[in-house]
Image (cartoon, rainbow, N blue to C red; front, side, top):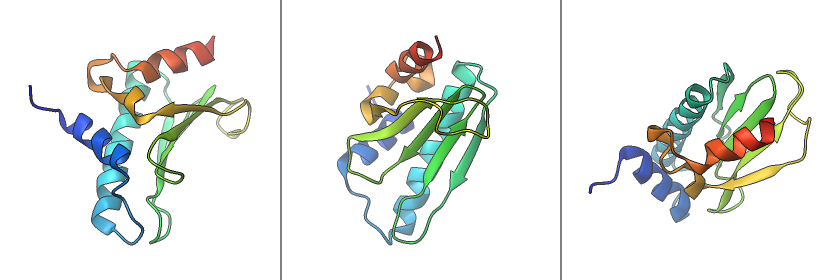
Length: 127
């Protein structure tokens, strides 16, 4: 079975291939991260804001999903594995409400089918 574009994006994120000053890599990452955040938003009916921060030329940038009770950030900053930050928050003006929880890129697989582990992680945090 051929991999979906979403799975190919996850493979890219895990590969560690992104290097600073790579505009094409940055565009690829941010487009995929925005799509992933929007899929999470829709699957969990969060009604959250999705924001893209391009950052400077030396970084990948990041995509944030900020809802009333969940804050999620996707970035390629600290290595290829733990790059999905999730925490509870108290409203959309607060992004530091709860402790950091980290997910792996692998936890995003199946997102386009509503079957990704990240959805269960977020549901558990919202309880």
